[in-house]
Structures are given as structure tokens and as C-alpha cells.
Amino acid sequence: MKNIQDEEYVCIIDDEPQVLRALERELKDYMSQSRCTVKTYSCPNKFLSDLDEFAEKVSLIISDLRMSEIKGSDLLLAVHNKYPDIELILLTAYNDIPDIQKAVTAKIRALILKPWEPDMVIVEIEKARTIFRMRNENKLHQAMINQQLEIAAEFQQKLLETEIPCIRNAEISLTYCPVKELKVGGDYYDIIKVDDNRFFVMIGDVSGHGVKPSFVTAMLKVITLSLMPIIKIEGYTPAGVLKRLNARLCQVLQNTDDVLMTFSCLMFDTENLKLTFSNAGHLPVFVVNSGECFTYQVDGPAMGFSPHMNYEDKDIELHLGDIVSICTDGLLESEIVHSNIDERIVARTLAKARKSKDFNTSVVAEIQQIRNIEDFHDDVTFISIRL
Image (cartoon, rainbow, N blue to C red; front, side):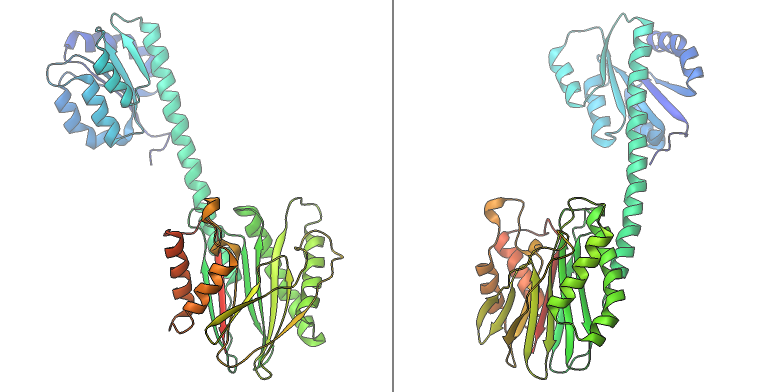
């Protein structure tokens, strides 16, 4: 990318040498003060063949319209197609509407008529160069922002990274698909082992997109790490976990508006084939059993409203061969409202994929096929536990 401190060229193309000399003479003082170099060409084809060598230094091209080798409109259009960031000005003494329209498609910055006013030419050149510099500065800033977002995304991924624990009679699979364009996401997930037969699965989704939700997920990870030893020792159920997490989250976010998080906490006991879960406004738990899929829900407010919220537990009896699934709403939602997928479609998809060797991959691929998309527009987290 061109740095704004690099050498800068303004190129003028006209097959009449006297015109080039006149413009070069009239622009000499301005260019000297602007620390900009004028390059002139009386041969348009020569210019086009040379441009590749120094295009990254060119901020502006001024071309005559009527030239024997090539029309200025065609020249500027060719330049724009290959180097769309270069500013363009058309110089003409003719009222040739079709060629001017062609130049407009090349997004020319200005049209200067011969004979020109020197001051007017300088004004138009300065406008074009200013726009070029502003655009280039924006690109540099955008590149810096993207670089910082890449670092933030890498940090968030490492922070949320969870090792799949080894649990008796349970095969745990985790799929996380962040939105590539946003780099950082608002989905939270964790799998925490209590002992060889018991473990917690936690999944959540912060409202909104971008950096702010990603900070909340990072804070929640730190909160969870600090609370989990106490939770294990004191034997908290999922409802108790949600109550503690919500209270701490509200305390941390007390000066922040409009931050809500749906959350679901599941506790598995593979020895007694029992699932206890509690919900804070999140999607239901799906259980696939003998080819059918059942949904289980328990009411509970999203986290972040108030530190004094209470939550309820719900127990589910499980059987060997069952598959328990939980996901964030990115799996269901579409940018096109009528393309949203409801829970019944998810349930059918889960039941259909029950015998698949890679259950998670099959489910996500089937949902994508149903929605006819390659990428999701929101983060997707999908966790399955096969007993």
C-alpha cells in the first residue's frame, strides 16, 4: 500500500507537445511546493506500457480526450480498471458526449476544458490529490485496525480455547464458526470436567456484533475460571452457576448499557445417565433418542438485566446412545428474515444426522444446504454430547 510520505507523481498525457510544455510550466511552482513530480507523455501507448513500473506512486492522471493513438476516455477507463485508486481528470476542447460518458464510467474526478484557466487547473489537481491522500490514509488506518482485530481475534480464540475432557461414556464434540469479516465474536463456550463421570457444558451469546461482545465473552471466561473451583467444591447446580455468573457479570458491567447475554448451563452425570440444565433466555436443549429429536426448555431471563435474578433447574433422564445438542442462534438466523430456520427444522436435521460418523459436521453442512449459504452471517457454536 502506498505510504503518504512516498514520492508522488502526477502524470499528464497529451499528444501535442506544446500543451504538455504549457501545463508543465504553469504547474512548476505548485508542484515544487507540493513536493510532487510531474511526468508528461506525448505517446499514450508508451505511458500505458510504462505505468506498471511506477503506478504505486501515481496519485493523479490528466489525459487529453482527442489523441491519435487512443482516446483519452479509453485510456482513463483502462487505467481505472487496473488501478482504481488513481484519481483521473479529462482534458478536452471538444463536446464529445459519448466519449465523455465513457470517461465518467472511469470515475473521472473532473473535466477541464481547453483553453484552461491555470488557477482552475491547480484547484482541480489539489482536490484530486487531497481525495487520493484521504483515501490512502483511510486504507492505512483500516489496515492498522484490521491488524489489531486479528490480534484481538487470536487472543480471544486462545482465551476461549477449551480442552475437550475425557469423560466415561461420553463423546463430546465442539464446532465453532466465527464470522470471518468481524474477526472477533460474541459467542461463549466452555466445557469443564468435575470428575470422570460429571462435567459442565456452558454456551452463551452476547447481543450485538464486533469488539464489544468479544470483550464481554473474555470477561465471562475470567469470571468462570475464578468461580469454578468454588462451584465444584460447593456442588452448585446449573441454576446456581447461572445465578453466580449473572451477579458477577452485572457487577462488572454496571456502567455499561445494552449488554445482554443468553446463556445455557448443562451438567452431565454419565454414571447415572442424568442431565440437569438451566437456561438464561437461550435456545432449548435438543436430545436425539432412537431417531427422534426432543426439545427441552426452562424459562429464565437473559444475563445482564439485574444481579438479583434467579434461575431454575430441569432434570432430563438420558439413555445410552442419546445425543444431546446445544447451539447459538447463529445456526438458525439469516440476514433474510424469511430464511430463518426454526427449532423444528433443527430437530429434524439432528435426527437425520444421528448415525453420521461426524455428527457436528453433518448437522452444520445440512443447515447450510437448507439455507443455501456458504458462510453464516453470525457466529455459530454447536456442541454435541453422544452417550
